Image (cartoon, rainbow, N blue to C red; front, side, top):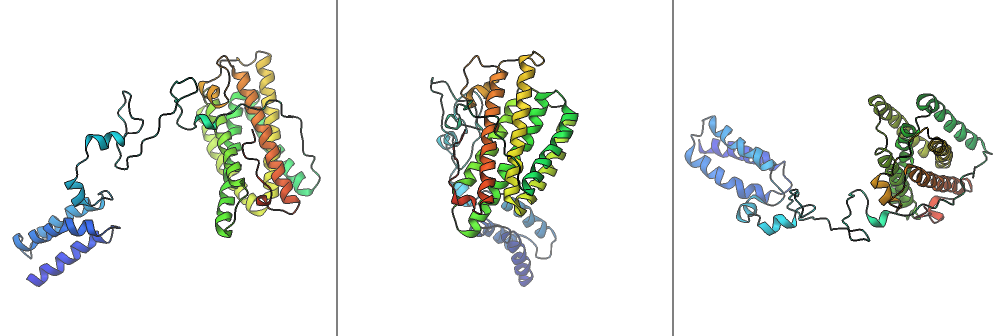
Length: 344
């Protein structure tokens, strides 16, 4: 009978142990259970199996510190305070064992910075003097294909949105934020595979993706998409993401050229947006607070000022992607040319 108990107890004690990274915590907590099993329970009773399986579920859900240490070292008030996220204020902070607490950030005038997705050092003033009329004349077959691809993408947008430029801007930004992220991730993986630097292009392309996402977050404060427009975003984003991923793997110069032409179309769309604002068809409401901080706009700025800043950003993205395509056309890799970091 004692041999049967040993075999059953060994199997049950080993079962949760296979699921844990650290076995020390399991052995320390399971030892009293095994002692009680062999001393107090009948060897053939089925309840012995059920009795030891219940704590096994608890073992799997414990923290990374051992159970013995956790029981002997309760959290003090100071530990909870140091692990609170956003310490201070009326709201109860998130308490974490890891003690990560974000630093307090303030503006230049001393007021508290309220945005979590970006910091004061991520903000900038848009260069509104950039040439908006630049255009890359398509000379090669791939250039012409890239231009026709973008024109084909614009046609259904013109039919669907017509002059609803607020919703059109949101749809545009959900697509425009994809290429930088896709290209940045692929370059990141290539850098790891080849053990080589990227020339700063990973950061530049991810910055572009984040900038486009901030455009979307800004326009969300001005215009709310309808349910069918949200559904359309799901479909368009899924198709475009996979298509651009495949296109970039096959031909990076073609992919960057597509984005360059896409940004040219974005400039055109925002120019039409400005015309509608100027003639009164769209109300020139005050600029959202997020736009005031992100583009360092004056407090009395309006939606028109926001659109001007966004249009300038698109012009910079146009230049960066046409430049990246030209690098590939000339037989070089992106890492051979310094990336235009901080080009706003």
